[in-house]
Image (cartoon, rainbow, N blue to C red; front, side):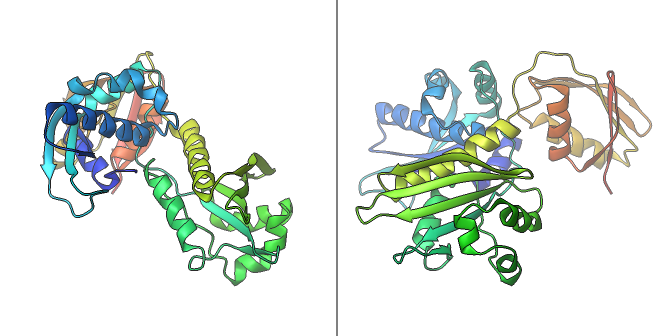
Length: 334
Protein backbone atom coordinates (compact mmCIF):
# COMPACT_ATOMS: atom_id res chain seq x y z
CA UNK A 1 0.00 0.00 0.00
CA UNK A 2 1.26 3.47 -0.85
CA UNK A 3 0.89 5.94 2.03
CA UNK A 4 1.86 9.44 1.04
CA UNK A 5 1.12 13.02 2.01
CA UNK A 6 2.40 14.76 -1.10
CA UNK A 7 0.24 17.85 -0.62
CA UNK A 8 2.04 18.53 2.65
CA UNK A 9 5.58 18.07 1.35
CA UNK A 10 6.30 21.65 0.26
CA UNK A 11 4.81 23.12 3.44
CA UNK A 12 6.71 20.66 5.59
CA UNK A 13 10.01 21.60 3.96
CA UNK A 14 9.57 25.24 4.96
CA UNK A 15 9.13 24.08 8.56
CA UNK A 16 12.31 21.99 8.44
CA UNK A 17 10.47 18.66 8.39
CA UNK A 18 9.29 15.98 6.00
CA UNK A 19 6.03 14.28 7.05
CA UNK A 20 4.98 10.75 6.11
CA UNK A 21 2.24 8.42 7.30
CA UNK A 22 2.57 4.77 8.30
CA UNK A 23 0.42 2.23 10.14
CA UNK A 24 1.37 0.29 13.26
CA UNK A 25 -0.22 -2.58 15.20
CA UNK A 26 0.07 -0.76 18.52
CA UNK A 27 2.05 1.94 20.35
CA UNK A 28 4.97 -0.27 21.39
CA UNK A 29 8.52 0.87 20.81
CA UNK A 30 9.16 -1.97 18.38
CA UNK A 31 6.08 -1.13 16.29
CA UNK A 32 6.96 2.58 16.22
CA UNK A 33 10.48 1.76 15.02
CA UNK A 34 9.07 -0.53 12.31
CA UNK A 35 6.61 2.17 11.25
CA UNK A 36 9.41 4.75 11.08
CA UNK A 37 11.33 2.58 8.63
CA UNK A 38 8.22 2.11 6.48
CA UNK A 39 7.46 5.83 6.52
CA UNK A 40 11.05 6.78 5.70
CA UNK A 41 11.13 4.32 2.78
CA UNK A 42 7.97 5.87 1.33
CA UNK A 43 9.33 9.38 1.85
CA UNK A 44 12.62 8.53 0.14
CA UNK A 45 10.79 7.02 -2.82
CA UNK A 46 8.93 10.30 -3.34
CA UNK A 47 11.97 12.51 -2.75
CA UNK A 48 14.35 10.64 -5.04
CA UNK A 49 12.08 8.81 -7.54
CA UNK A 50 14.32 5.81 -6.97
CA UNK A 51 12.39 2.67 -7.85
CA UNK A 52 14.53 0.11 -5.97
CA UNK A 53 13.97 0.21 -2.16
CA UNK A 54 17.36 -1.49 -1.67
CA UNK A 55 18.94 1.86 -2.61
CA UNK A 56 17.61 3.26 0.69
CA UNK A 57 19.06 0.64 3.04
CA UNK A 58 21.87 2.82 4.44
CA UNK A 59 19.43 5.70 5.05
CA UNK A 60 16.61 3.60 6.54
CA UNK A 61 19.15 2.16 8.98
CA UNK A 62 19.39 5.69 10.43
CA UNK A 63 15.62 6.11 10.86
CA UNK A 64 15.79 6.44 14.66
CA UNK A 65 18.10 9.46 14.40
CA UNK A 66 16.16 11.07 11.54
CA UNK A 67 12.72 11.01 13.23
CA UNK A 68 11.84 14.19 15.12
CA UNK A 69 8.52 12.95 16.45
CA UNK A 70 5.67 10.49 15.84
CA UNK A 71 2.05 11.62 16.14
CA UNK A 72 -0.82 9.15 16.51
CA UNK A 73 -3.82 10.21 14.42
CA UNK A 74 -7.49 9.32 14.14
CA UNK A 75 -8.12 7.92 10.66
CA UNK A 76 -11.10 6.52 8.77
CA UNK A 77 -8.83 5.17 6.02
CA UNK A 78 -7.07 2.30 7.74
CA UNK A 79 -5.97 -0.64 5.53
CA UNK A 80 -7.33 -3.14 8.08
CA UNK A 81 -8.94 -3.29 11.50
CA UNK A 82 -6.76 -2.85 14.57
CA UNK A 83 -4.06 -0.70 12.96
CA UNK A 84 -3.04 2.74 14.20
CA UNK A 85 -2.24 5.69 11.91
CA UNK A 86 1.02 7.44 12.78
CA UNK A 87 2.38 10.64 11.23
CA UNK A 88 6.18 10.62 11.35
CA UNK A 89 8.06 13.92 11.11
CA UNK A 90 11.66 13.68 9.86
CA UNK A 91 14.42 16.28 9.98
CA UNK A 92 14.43 17.56 6.39
CA UNK A 93 18.05 18.74 6.36
CA UNK A 94 19.31 15.50 7.89
CA UNK A 95 17.30 13.36 5.44
CA UNK A 96 18.56 15.36 2.47
CA UNK A 97 22.14 15.07 3.67
CA UNK A 98 21.72 11.30 4.08
CA UNK A 99 20.30 11.07 0.54
CA UNK A 100 23.35 12.82 -0.89
CA UNK A 101 25.74 10.74 1.21
CA UNK A 102 24.09 7.60 -0.21
CA UNK A 103 24.88 8.81 -3.72
CA UNK A 104 21.26 9.59 -4.58
CA UNK A 105 19.59 12.81 -5.73
CA UNK A 106 16.54 14.79 -4.66
CA UNK A 107 13.92 15.66 -7.27
CA UNK A 108 12.35 19.10 -6.66
CA UNK A 109 8.59 19.46 -6.15
CA UNK A 110 7.93 21.14 -9.51
CA UNK A 111 7.49 17.98 -11.57
CA UNK A 112 5.91 17.82 -15.02
CA UNK A 113 2.74 15.82 -15.71
CA UNK A 114 3.44 13.26 -18.46
CA UNK A 115 0.91 12.76 -21.26
CA UNK A 116 0.11 9.10 -22.01
CA UNK A 117 -1.12 8.25 -25.52
CA UNK A 118 -2.79 4.96 -24.73
CA UNK A 119 -4.17 2.42 -27.21
CA UNK A 120 -6.15 -0.58 -25.94
CA UNK A 121 -6.85 -3.72 -27.94
CA UNK A 122 -10.53 -4.62 -27.43
CA UNK A 123 -12.18 -8.04 -27.39
CA UNK A 124 -12.60 -7.96 -31.17
CA UNK A 125 -8.84 -7.29 -31.49
CA UNK A 126 -9.53 -3.76 -32.72
CA UNK A 127 -7.48 -0.89 -31.22
CA UNK A 128 -9.22 2.00 -29.48
CA UNK A 129 -8.12 4.98 -27.41
CA UNK A 130 -8.26 4.48 -23.66
CA UNK A 131 -11.51 5.82 -22.22
CA UNK A 132 -11.61 7.80 -18.97
CA UNK A 133 -14.90 6.15 -17.95
CA UNK A 134 -14.75 2.63 -19.38
CA UNK A 135 -11.11 2.19 -18.33
CA UNK A 136 -11.40 4.06 -15.05
CA UNK A 137 -10.12 1.11 -12.92
CA UNK A 138 -6.90 0.93 -14.96
CA UNK A 139 -6.34 4.70 -14.89
CA UNK A 140 -7.10 4.85 -11.16
CA UNK A 141 -4.64 2.06 -10.42
CA UNK A 142 -1.92 3.81 -12.42
CA UNK A 143 -2.68 7.08 -10.63
CA UNK A 144 -2.21 5.28 -7.30
CA UNK A 145 1.11 3.76 -8.41
CA UNK A 146 2.37 7.17 -9.55
CA UNK A 147 1.27 8.78 -6.28
CA UNK A 148 3.88 6.66 -4.48
CA UNK A 149 6.45 8.79 -6.35
CA UNK A 150 4.48 12.02 -5.89
CA UNK A 151 3.78 12.02 -9.64
CA UNK A 152 0.67 12.45 -11.77
CA UNK A 153 -0.23 11.74 -15.40
CA UNK A 154 -2.95 12.59 -17.89
CA UNK A 155 -4.23 11.06 -21.11
CA UNK A 156 -4.59 13.41 -24.10
CA UNK A 157 -7.98 15.00 -24.66
CA UNK A 158 -8.71 12.61 -27.54
CA UNK A 159 -11.04 15.29 -28.89
CA UNK A 160 -11.75 16.11 -32.53
CA UNK A 161 -8.40 17.83 -33.01
CA UNK A 162 -6.48 14.84 -31.65
CA UNK A 163 -8.51 12.38 -33.71
CA UNK A 164 -7.91 14.36 -36.90
CA UNK A 165 -4.18 13.99 -36.32
CA UNK A 166 -4.09 10.42 -35.03
CA UNK A 167 -6.31 7.33 -35.24
CA UNK A 168 -6.30 4.41 -32.77
CA UNK A 169 -4.90 2.20 -35.54
CA UNK A 170 -2.02 4.59 -36.17
CA UNK A 171 -1.27 4.75 -32.44
CA UNK A 172 -1.39 0.95 -32.13
CA UNK A 173 0.90 0.50 -35.12
CA UNK A 174 3.39 3.13 -33.85
CA UNK A 175 3.07 5.33 -36.92
CA UNK A 176 5.71 7.83 -35.88
CA UNK A 177 4.82 10.80 -38.09
CA UNK A 178 1.19 10.90 -36.98
CA UNK A 179 2.09 10.40 -33.31
CA UNK A 180 4.74 13.12 -33.23
CA UNK A 181 2.42 15.52 -35.04
CA UNK A 182 -0.41 14.90 -32.57
CA UNK A 183 1.94 15.15 -29.58
CA UNK A 184 3.19 18.59 -30.66
CA UNK A 185 -0.11 20.05 -29.40
CA UNK A 186 0.85 19.22 -25.80
CA UNK A 187 4.08 21.19 -25.64
CA UNK A 188 7.19 20.17 -23.73
CA UNK A 189 5.63 17.75 -21.22
CA UNK A 190 7.08 14.22 -21.33
CA UNK A 191 4.89 12.08 -23.59
CA UNK A 192 4.60 8.31 -23.90
CA UNK A 193 2.81 5.73 -26.03
CA UNK A 194 1.22 2.78 -24.22
CA UNK A 195 -0.06 -0.20 -26.25
CA UNK A 196 -2.14 -2.43 -23.98
CA UNK A 197 -3.70 -5.86 -24.58
CA UNK A 198 -5.38 -7.88 -21.83
CA UNK A 199 -5.37 -11.67 -22.34
CA UNK A 200 -8.01 -14.18 -21.23
CA UNK A 201 -5.73 -15.52 -18.46
CA UNK A 202 -5.46 -12.01 -16.91
CA UNK A 203 -2.00 -11.47 -18.31
CA UNK A 204 -1.25 -8.17 -20.07
CA UNK A 205 0.98 -7.50 -23.06
CA UNK A 206 2.21 -3.91 -22.77
CA UNK A 207 4.59 -1.82 -24.83
CA UNK A 208 5.79 1.56 -23.59
CA UNK A 209 7.61 4.06 -25.79
CA UNK A 210 8.70 7.65 -25.26
CA UNK A 211 7.84 10.28 -27.86
CA UNK A 212 10.88 12.24 -28.99
CA UNK A 213 11.05 14.91 -31.73
CA UNK A 214 12.93 12.43 -33.90
CA UNK A 215 10.50 9.56 -33.27
CA UNK A 216 9.63 6.83 -30.78
CA UNK A 217 12.04 5.21 -28.35
CA UNK A 218 10.81 1.81 -27.11
CA UNK A 219 11.33 1.50 -23.33
CA UNK A 220 9.90 -1.97 -22.83
CA UNK A 221 7.71 -4.55 -24.55
CA UNK A 222 6.76 -7.57 -22.49
CA UNK A 223 4.07 -9.82 -21.06
CA UNK A 224 3.06 -9.17 -17.44
CA UNK A 225 1.37 -11.58 -15.07
CA UNK A 226 -1.35 -9.05 -14.25
CA UNK A 227 -2.54 -5.53 -14.98
CA UNK A 228 -1.20 -4.45 -11.58
CA UNK A 229 2.38 -5.45 -12.37
CA UNK A 230 2.15 -3.81 -15.81
CA UNK A 231 0.91 -0.54 -14.29
CA UNK A 232 3.65 -0.62 -11.67
CA UNK A 233 6.21 -1.02 -14.46
CA UNK A 234 4.77 2.00 -16.30
CA UNK A 235 4.88 4.11 -13.14
CA UNK A 236 8.45 3.02 -12.37
CA UNK A 237 9.58 3.87 -15.90
CA UNK A 238 8.08 7.37 -15.69
CA UNK A 239 9.73 7.88 -12.29
CA UNK A 240 13.09 6.71 -13.62
CA UNK A 241 12.94 9.05 -16.61
CA UNK A 242 12.03 12.08 -14.48
CA UNK A 243 14.67 11.19 -11.88
CA UNK A 244 17.37 11.05 -14.56
CA UNK A 245 16.20 14.38 -15.94
CA UNK A 246 15.49 16.39 -12.77
CA UNK A 247 17.39 14.99 -9.75
CA UNK A 248 19.58 17.43 -7.81
CA UNK A 249 22.75 15.64 -6.70
CA UNK A 250 25.63 16.46 -4.37
CA UNK A 251 28.39 18.71 -5.70
CA UNK A 252 31.52 19.94 -3.92
CA UNK A 253 32.43 22.86 -6.20
CA UNK A 254 32.46 26.37 -4.69
CA UNK A 255 29.43 28.59 -5.25
CA UNK A 256 29.29 32.20 -6.45
CA UNK A 257 27.84 35.09 -4.46
CA UNK A 258 24.05 35.24 -4.71
CA UNK A 259 22.83 38.80 -5.30
CA UNK A 260 19.26 40.08 -5.17
CA UNK A 261 18.75 43.48 -6.81
CA UNK A 262 16.19 46.22 -6.32
CA UNK A 263 14.59 44.98 -3.10
CA UNK A 264 11.66 47.16 -2.11
CA UNK A 265 11.37 47.02 1.63
CA UNK A 266 11.92 44.68 4.55
CA UNK A 267 9.09 42.33 3.50
CA UNK A 268 10.97 41.27 0.36
CA UNK A 269 14.18 40.81 2.34
CA UNK A 270 12.38 38.53 4.82
CA UNK A 271 10.59 36.64 2.04
CA UNK A 272 13.98 35.73 0.55
CA UNK A 273 15.75 34.82 3.76
CA UNK A 274 12.84 32.80 5.19
CA UNK A 275 12.48 30.77 1.99
CA UNK A 276 16.20 30.03 1.85
CA UNK A 277 16.46 29.18 5.55
CA UNK A 278 13.76 26.54 5.05
CA UNK A 279 15.26 24.98 1.91
CA UNK A 280 16.88 21.57 2.21
CA UNK A 281 19.30 22.63 -0.53
CA UNK A 282 20.84 25.39 1.60
CA UNK A 283 23.26 24.06 4.22
CA UNK A 284 24.18 27.51 5.54
CA UNK A 285 23.68 31.10 4.48
CA UNK A 286 24.97 34.46 5.69
CA UNK A 287 24.48 38.06 4.64
CA UNK A 288 27.69 39.18 2.96
CA UNK A 289 26.51 42.71 2.12
CA UNK A 290 23.31 44.72 2.40
CA UNK A 291 23.72 48.01 0.59
CA UNK A 292 20.66 50.06 -0.31
CA UNK A 293 18.34 47.80 -2.31
CA UNK A 294 20.94 45.09 -2.94
CA UNK A 295 21.25 41.95 -0.80
CA UNK A 296 24.38 39.80 -1.23
CA UNK A 297 24.44 36.29 0.31
CA UNK A 298 27.13 33.66 0.72
CA UNK A 299 25.90 30.08 0.47
CA UNK A 300 26.99 26.63 1.41
CA UNK A 301 25.00 24.00 -0.46
CA UNK A 302 25.48 20.36 -1.45
CA UNK A 303 24.37 21.10 -5.03
CA UNK A 304 26.10 22.59 -8.08
CA UNK A 305 25.74 26.22 -9.14
CA UNK A 306 23.49 25.23 -12.06
CA UNK A 307 21.26 23.19 -9.77
CA UNK A 308 21.23 25.97 -7.15
CA UNK A 309 20.14 28.45 -9.83
CA UNK A 310 17.23 26.17 -10.74
CA UNK A 311 16.32 25.69 -7.06
CA UNK A 312 16.25 29.44 -6.42
CA UNK A 313 14.06 30.10 -9.47
CA UNK A 314 11.65 27.42 -8.28
CA UNK A 315 11.68 28.53 -4.65
CA UNK A 316 11.15 32.27 -5.16
CA UNK A 317 9.45 34.56 -7.72
CA UNK A 318 12.74 35.57 -9.36
CA UNK A 319 14.20 36.47 -12.73
CA UNK A 320 17.84 35.77 -13.52
CA UNK A 321 19.64 39.04 -14.36
CA UNK A 322 23.15 37.74 -14.98
CA UNK A 323 25.41 34.79 -14.26
CA UNK A 324 29.20 34.49 -14.24
CA UNK A 325 31.89 32.62 -12.32
CA UNK A 326 31.67 34.94 -9.31
CA UNK A 327 28.03 36.02 -9.10
CA UNK A 328 24.46 34.96 -9.68
CA UNK A 329 22.23 38.06 -9.91
CA UNK A 330 18.45 37.96 -9.51
CA UNK A 331 15.61 40.38 -9.21
CA UNK A 332 12.08 39.77 -7.95
CA UNK A 333 9.41 39.28 -10.60
CA UNK A 334 6.70 41.88 -10.17
